[in-house]
Length: 553
Ligand code: SIN
Image 1 (tube, rainbow, N blue to C red):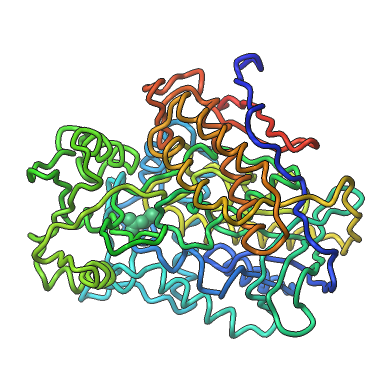
Image 2: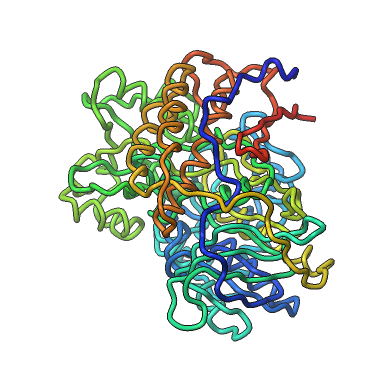
């Protein structure tokens, strides 16, 4: 595609190549620095330990505070003898609408079952049938029952518990909590050799410091907090993607933010994070209905309520637009109280706490931002475009999700690519290099107070539905927000990360003039062959977003 066809991104804010922060007041070294403590980060740490390496895991709040523990549905993997990796790959690629990397998908589906079995050996207890076999369920876009789950709808909590326990058993994994990473440190040859970070600690590693490492693994999770409603926790502020962009790494497919069709809508939920109503509930037979009780997904897709997520989210949005309501309903009443309480204890508890009993009531639901299908671009070994910098989990774009992630492929991706990263690092780990002082000024940050305005503007102009006009209005607002300056502190660093990832998303969403997967352009309503490829974003030396288009092979 010629560069003239790429619209200007000049009206987006100038972005910092470095965050304003005090000079590091302390430093320490480790072999490998892992940032993030969800499924990807902790799995990477454990596999790196198997390779005999010293690992430091830094995490923004407490070890269990990321997205993993909120995952309900499960982990997709071929564990039924009648299922095949080819069938799982096929479902993954259909959901990804032509943008999945087939080699990455093959890795995911072929290596996934072994990683799930490892997790079980480590102590993760998945739900089983009376005969002892694994209980497998189905979610949207899957044409076979291949989702393992735990505690009914508490899969993420069980995965997090098992990994957390394993990490705590290993004295050679150092855990640094309450640590917000700031910027990447680079050696004279450009290789990543550590990070600066701010730790709210007591003792030697308090305040801004540096951890030097022979390799750095980003596993910081997603960016759902760029929107006003999301299933992601408050820590999901795109820190890893923003850090990678500031360092000059390539970020791709960021326009493909998946909106989960069924987040719980109730007046008593006032936080940005909304409770998830797992797709597995639809997998077990719950129906989506409008105010008149009509099943509106029937006839829209052969899989009706179990169509891929983008299709269901769009189906719901059409109803919301037509009726002016802020929710539709999920009807699970016919599944019965005993089944619902046993199979979906988390959902039953959270809805009952808000006065909605799924045994007798319809559950009000609406789409909410759920998952970043894109992120920091990696190869099949988890390497980013910066030597020594790796990424896995939601922060990464390995190529498995394409334009829309298939349900329950996310925990799986974290498990599979974290192991690959550990193997790659063990194969070639150079000695510790000294960081060189970054050139240029000391960077800057925007005020924490922009957060709510940014979320509103992104929701209005760059949410489930987008158009040239809505995206231009959002770009203008991001520019206004980006002109403000603040004193460095955690909330301001986070707000700057939100601004950085939101700007990259808006830039890509404006450029991609088609509708594909979870990127829905009202002014370009169909998928176009000429857009079958990836938009690669980076930030240049002046702080401007630059883009390239890479056609699919
Ligand atoms: C869900 O339980 O519906 C979420 C699962 C996922 O995001 O893959």
